[in-house]
Image 1 (cartoon, rainbow, N blue to C red):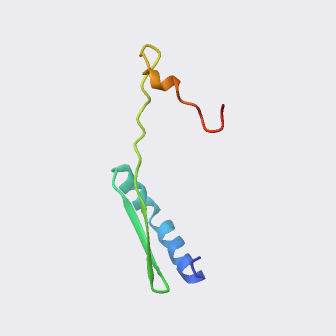
Image 2 (cartoon, rainbow, N blue to C red):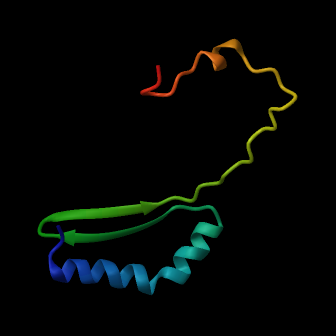
Length: 75
């Protein structure tokens, strides 16, 4: 757990840099923020995720192993 001053510093950095952070993420680049707690440097890295649309499978034939799948906990 971060001490009060370090927690406040991290919160202020995240809040103060939110516009810049958004711009960086929109350019699909990672963004980092670091704080020092005691003698430990803590770094958070935010990386953008690009979600791809799922393939349309109604006309595609699934491999036979697809029908062997059983969710955990089912018989």
